[in-house]
Length: 131
View 1 (cartoon, rainbow, N blue to C red):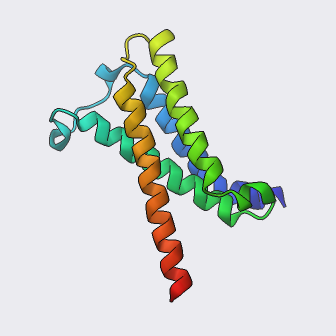
View 2: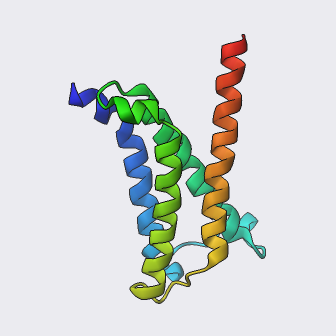
């Protein structure tokens, strides 16, 4: 039965590992993407990463039928997790991975991405209920 939990949640766990790796790796090793070569592009990337994390995590919690508290709180727990993880990454960049820069705006972009995901999830859920 626990296999059903992993079936729906392994995707967001893999995405979280990717975010963690990219957040703490030396940025000189990350290739530049031409269309993201403008001021503030990194904030969009932060928002997209945490938007996707929120979508994947809430979908995994909602689909699994093993931990009922996770299923019942499929928006609340992932949202607070995204905020906490984003803050944790910024603290790591400030204290351990000092070759990266910790910024409040990055934390704000992470939170904005998670909030946008909630708005979209609620919109989709409500549209399915009404149809």
